[in-house]
Image 1 (tube, rainbow, N blue to C red):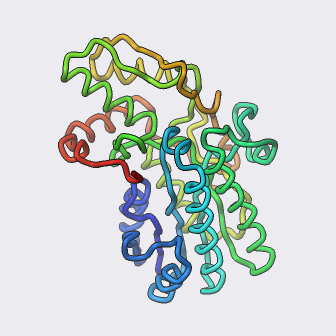
Image 2 (spheres, rainbow, N blue to C red):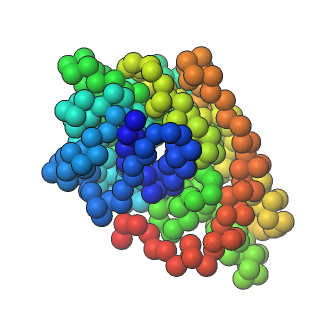
Length: 316
């Protein structure tokens, strides 16, 4: 089969591509400068060229709290355009299975922990990333509508916070784990006694190693299952940002003072996903625990630091 992976050169896309490439299927990926999926005509040109049997839509505009607050309209519009074009063309070109990647950010700001898929529509997402979260949530309803009207088989996977080798370490768009790793290593190198961190450290997160996420995506995308309502993908475990920082500093053998910038936003108070639906349907269980995952991520950054430090934020 021909498997089209959009966003295939991104952080998650690379892990998915490498995993799928070991199969007998033909896996196709592309750069956004070749085909901009926000533009309907370019997206259609891609589908005409590839004629995919399976589509895994990883293409998205992504970033941390700061970037989401700065460009909310762009986050909403870019993600809606990409998703709408991929869904419409998947139906038009008779794709057998579309796997759409959603996000934990789509859940309401205050949601009982662990998050269950039935909680998804019970309120507005946390304000700092509401535009992104609502756009991704709207695509879940589009998936349902496309199935009812056109018979398009799709599955939406709601991913926990990802991290791992290949993560985004750029200032402005990095998420919490790469941002902390970079700050700590830079402070240690320069001999600074403290590092500054956003918020107060109280929020909790469910951190999913990128290779585990890729495994879940492969399981769902290559299955013969028909349309399935959204499914959570995570570890089912939560850790506070304050405890996360301590764990990273312990691995790095650092002893810094932590200067919490309480005038900066915390983001959603708690996040932890119930993964019973995915487990019962596909037998999924994450294999890489947080300590091993952090050590592998730190090793990646140290080995690629010179190159990574020359990269600028994607959206300036």
